[in-house]
Amino acid sequence: MKKKHCYRCERFSYSSIDSGVWLCPTCGENLVLQPPMKAISYIEIKINKLNDNRQKYLDLYDKKEKYVENC
View 1 (tube, one colour):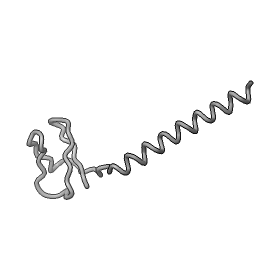
View 2 (cartoon, helix red, strand yellow; view 1 turned 60 degrees about the vertical axis):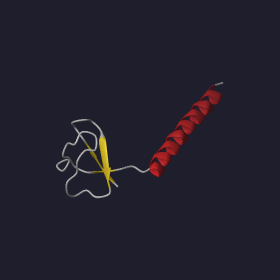
View 3 (cartoon, helix red, strand yellow; view 1 turned 90 degrees about the vertical axis):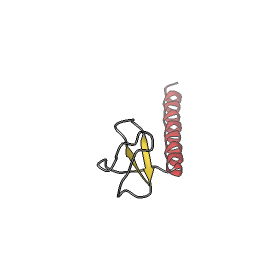
């Protein structure tokens, strides 16, 4: 799945094909000259969120360990 950013209305347009005529569904701007980007899937978003939460937990754990050592 690919996506293109419309600079006219500032929205994204999604498609499974990145060739041929590609019109913005919101404003009708021709997006053929815009470079296609990889659209992030729902699963990738969940994985990124889980990794972020894991990192926050590890950061808090490190702070707790340092606090306990200083007491």
